[in-house]
Length: 312
Image (cartoon, rainbow, N blue to C red; front, side, top):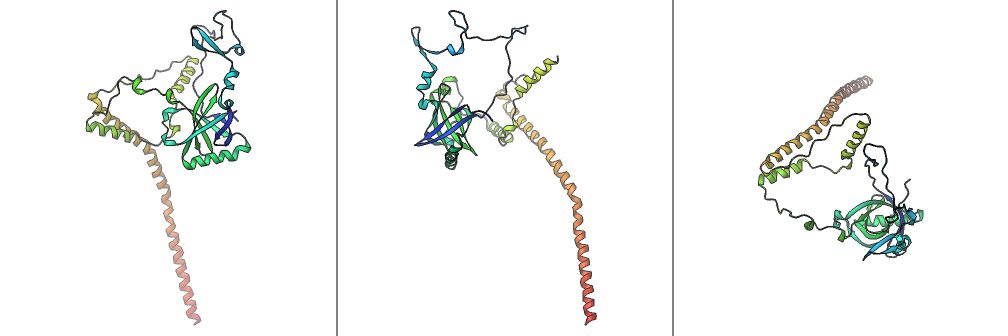
């Protein structure tokens, strides 16, 4: 079992629900070390005192805040913990909001929340079920690893999921970041219709397992090939931007390609259906058995009638 990365309590009103936080995601990037070119000499980083040039142990390092004029205020780790709300062990709920109201841009990272122990299972389940029935998310704050986070807690089946979020002042204004944003597209009706058709032809259900990190796969192939002295074929370059004059033709070609791709996926299913129908054909002999049985039953009835007449 994984170890929790944070233990604390969800507090709302006068209720406190002990919980444990676990990582919900993991990175699958290839890990590299650094070497000096043309050697196998590792490059390592050291914490060095810039004045003396000597290495400093981690436990001897403190944080300093620049207050201007070349002056710094030194802060000990314990001092940061002492001023944290609830001593960094409280996840205070400030409001319950509709899930649909939260803009996804605020979401940062996902964590699982589990009950803090057997004694908190009932209150944990009560909070989860009540939020699910109301379709609400709890918005709160917590301090973790020397930083305060805005957080959204939402029910997801049997568990509660916590999403760390960006504060409002951490979200950049797109109009300040991008010089010019186009208004409503001044496209021809045929182009707009073809674009809508392309979107429809490429639409489908959300299945996370359908998508894979192909770049990491290529990196692993590169490492494997180089370890065996082989060469790897480079990927194709990115396509050139579509010009306004070619837009309609490119859209039309894209729609045709999408249709062909769907037809190719459906073909195996049709073949399987034909095979299933062919296998079921011999089952038509069953009615013949029923007819034979019916004839035997009729013959028995006839014999019974003759016997009755003779007896009379």
